[in-house]
Length: 391
Ligand code: BGC
Figure 1 (cartoon, rainbow, N blue to C red):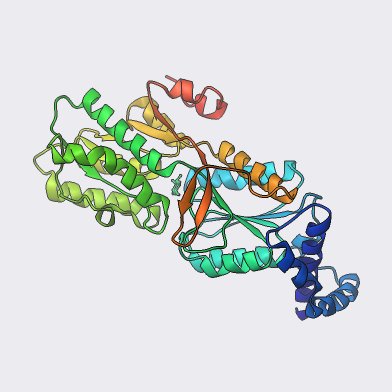
Figure 2 (figure 1 turned 60 degrees about the vertical axis):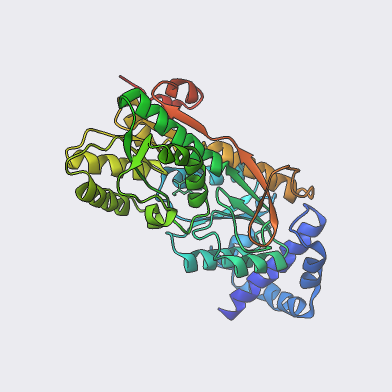
């Protein structure tokens, strides 16, 4: 075991050194040169070379030994529980391999320690760039500092990486904008389907550890709060703070239980007209709860354009979703990786987000709202989703 560890240390040092010369490489080049040339690493190299001949590293630890030419890229995803993350796992593999990189892709099942350990092992296996969709935006500080010290570039994917200097940029769809679109669609649906105001509504937020969730909620409330204040919208439960409305771990079952309780406690003799939902899974849970309670289906927003919700939007069961195409976000990330690995650094951007410690460059794509009216247009270039829009 000790010998294999030596192999991976050797590989890390060798790859870092190679990255510095041939194909560009990680951040902190000077620090990385020092690491690669440090006496300890040289000793490990001598040991590792003989070990390598005698006993090839196993598949996992050998990840650093078979670079496809372009370099090694780690991708740490928070979970695979919503369609966007499951798509990201597949699309990163396809797009990174097509671009000539070796991809190490792992998902953390919503568990912070698991994700820390996965990132740690990507560093050990010689990743030159690590892409991270954090389980908890603020809990990766020390492992990302470690990546930075090892000369590895770190890119936040879809979610901001908070409270750390170990992040070079974030690629995401505008998160406050997403919330604004959700709220605007909710209002549009209420006017279209629920007659005259006032409208009875409830509010849901996403997982509180995910930095997107408060942003989605803030964006939505910037649209809804003035209408709550003037009485157009009535939040019958009175629950309007993010902390009251959040859904731990984006867990659909928890959202459904909360909706059941809201209906039982507040709507025994009135109808609910609309619900702000932060994503599609939670939207379907809310709608199911209302159906079970014998309520007419309320106007419900969503996010992700998940297949099942695209069908529900088309059939009128869910009013809206917001499309944030995973293939475009992955392609944008891969183009930044190309720039980093070819030695050109982070591309320019005018947008930054303060992560509590530094201003992080943000590469932002526009989210697009989807209702039955524009679904065919939005998915014109997405044959899989287009195929779901059948009468
Ligand atoms: C993503 C959403 C997703 C949610 C739950 C958010 O950070 O932006 O697309 O639905 O996480 O996985």
